[in-house]
Image (cartoon, one colour):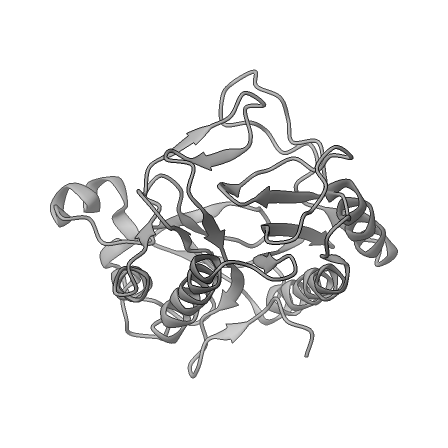
Length: 275
C-alpha cells in the first residue's frame, strides 16, 4: 500500500512511503556530507549550490526548492537548489557567485530533494574556519535544541512537548527562538500539516486556535521536519529586498538546524542521515 491515511488532518505514512522518504533523506544527507567538505574561506555559495544539484540529479531526484513559490502572491519563485544563509541571515538565502565565504562566517545550508514523489529536507549551520565564541555557543545551542525536540518526538507525547523542549534548550543558554517561522509536516509535499511551533506561546488558548496540532498526540507514521531557528539577539526577523532572504532584525547572528524525522513505536527515526 502506497498511499497514506490521515488523522486529524495529519498524514500517517505507509511503510512504502517511509521507504521512499528514507531514500530522499539519504540523498539530502549525502549533500550535507559534501557541504561539510566544501565549506571553507574562498568558496562561493554558487559553488555549493552547483555541487548540491549535481548530487541530487545524479540520483534521478529533483531539487525541492527550485521554483518554490514565494509567500507573497506574485513574488519571485526560489531560483536555486540550496538556501545559503550567512551570519545574520537565518533562512532562504539565495546562492550567488558574489557571496564568498570568509574566515569566521557561519552559514546555514538548507537542502531538499524529491525522490519518486517524496521529500527529504534538512538544514545545518556550518562554521567557516575559526569562529567567535558567541558563534560557537550559538551553533551548539541550536543543534542541541534540535536534539532536545527530537527526544520528545515519541508516541503519546504532544506536539507542544516538542516545542517546549526546543525553546527551553535554547533560552536556557541565553539565546532566542524565532517565532515567525515554524517546523512543519513533510511527505509528498515540502510543507504538509501540521505547522509545529518551535516555542510555546504564552496564551495557549489563542495559539491552539491558530496551531490546532499543538495539543494533539504524536502517532507512529507521522513525519515532519523539525527545524529550530535561534538568534543571538532578539527573535524578530525581516525579509530582505530579494523577497526571500530572512535576516535577524537586529543584525546579530542566527543559526538553523533541521532533520526530517518519522514517529515510530519506539525512538524517532531520523530520515535525513546517511546510515
